[in-house]
Length: 251
Ligand SMILES: N[C@@H](CCC(=O)N[C@@H](CS)C(=O)NCC(=O)O)C(=O)O
Image (cartoon, rainbow, N blue to C red):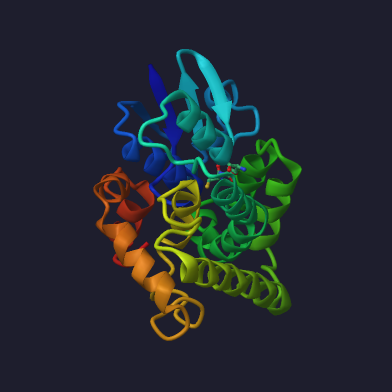
């Protein structure tokens, strides 16, 4: 049996949902509301002591790290293959998934936290927030939440992260010059990883990702959104969007 602990269909959770849906795999969905700090509750820490989603549980075995989970799924459930058989194409795929994990996703995440942290913390007293912070297992996450909620990041930091996003979209634009998909002729985990991060960027980062700046990426984005597996993954429940609707504005 496959079980997935995940948040709304965005970022690292979306990455694994896209892979599961592409392969048509049945799984038990455990929605973890990260805006309500459920990922730091003892019952979730017992599954992943890092207090992060997504987490795959396959016949009782816990697997963490979205990129590792997707590679595991592709190995155990090989059809349709999402890692190219051609070694060069596979290397291109792995360079992109590594880039997403090491640079693109952290930059997007820092910008995202800065923009949304107050929608979470404004509901809490300083004491309640301090208690929530104290339960976060990873030091770098504690620091990220603390700075974003207090003084916020500097304009220089935000600009540097935006430059990383522009660099990443530039890499995707360049990759798409030599094939319909990011690693070449075949749809792969590179498309899955990049789309999981860039899904909501059009309109929000129009100076970085638009018909003018990145026409091939925009075309790829439309083709991605037309895939039934992508439609199904994006339709998974989203507590964040529900909360945003309740506040009367888009998530
Ligand atoms: N390297 C991990 C990162 C996981 C991660 O940062 N997950 C985020 C959601 S996208 C999370 O759980 N955030 C809540 C928290 O850290 O408290 C992966 O790729 O799975």
